[in-house]
Image (tube, rainbow, N blue to C red; front, side, top):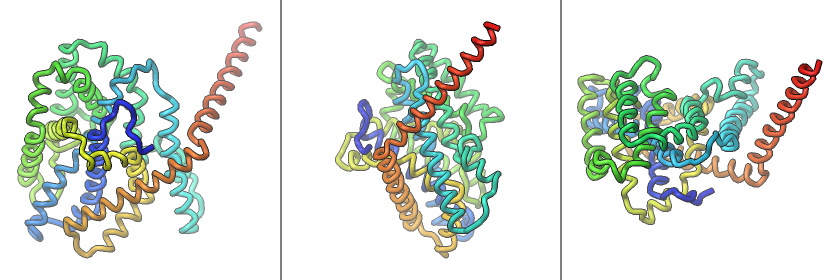
Length: 365
């Protein structure tokens, strides 16, 4: 599981790891720093944290860009339900196991409503990102087919229209980018880079100055955060939402920058962690873990320094990745994924056969 899949490059897989580190750092700042820091109390630390916050908020967009960039190449005519089942099973595993541990440790009685939410984590949006991502993955073969069927000009017009609706106008229901609609746009934009980069003057020029653009946009978000947010630490509303125009430009810029960097030994080593990044999200963002993790960390530190914050994020990332490594090892050894998928497929086939027979009997009578 540590080997990069065919057709994937270690620099992009390294960026996937960095994107997840950004997400963890984002959560660290949200749950620890924002509650105790203001411009009046510690102006220098506030400014440092403010800049870091604007940078790490790119994590979700980066993750979806990477997925779209690779998934748009799929030649499948329909959804890969085996992979959907595999993803769902990993979500279910963490949801059920962590809940069982919580019940056992705290010796509290089973709550039927809680249990339903635990057994159906995607349906009840226990992990908002996974719920949207799963929807995107299910639709990806059809989106890929649509992307490949369009001419370059048609694709550009579609993207501009999509961008105006989702990022400039930010119509109601987009929830600041916490939505499937925004994920669909990012997927299609990443698909355009994959399919038309070599023939697109805009993407070529963007690619040339990608690193500079990323730094400039991050600095701009930092500067405009002061008149918008005042003395409180937060992301910049509208411009800095996941679907904010400035954050989107920054995310694409960082993606393009990493796409062209050389695959050094460090990049290759970091990329080995890529297969475990989804697990990092599933572990540290589990509702039960979140409740105890951030409460414990807030009580542990009387003051937070930027070095402490990075250390906390790295510890969370590596410990969660190790847990995911163990889960994958167990699932691979016991062949749980394939057994579960085959059980579902056989059950579905049996139900379909019974329904067909009953329907046939009804027609005869």
